[in-house]
Image (tube, rainbow, N blue to C red; front, side):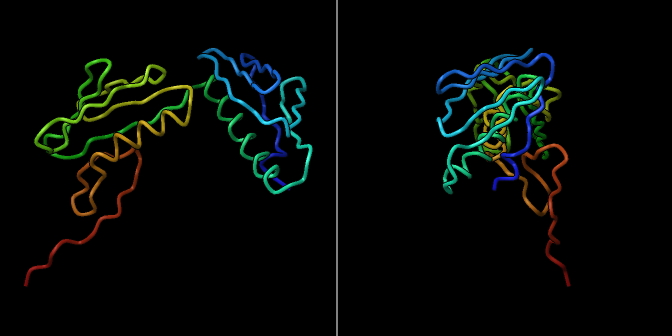
Length: 178
């Protein structure tokens, strides 16, 4: 039995859900999201809660039940209160520049690295070394943040690189002199 799939999804007042044949549409104050669904699930919409149930008891149906519940929960949270990731560039000369629709990252390479910002994700420059990535789709926000971080992940000796806000970096001891 999927424990995650059995949990009800609480719907805020400003979020509405429409269920069509093979499509689920979630709309709220920040936008609208759509997702294709398999017909193996049964949706029950009570006052301000959405319950998911499955028609068959196969291993695949059980896994899909929990997955869809988590994805729908993320859709509801995204259109209600957007997802956000904050990245910090740590190091001498490391900085971010915003030249819409591109993000320019200088992290010690011989050339700056440029990123094309997707239209449904907003990047806000809080300072030269700090950016905020915001959007209604959790997957896209996290993927863009991980791609930017992958340019220069933090190294364990001095901590230089691009890191998430609040990320703990395990530091290693350097060489010991005699």
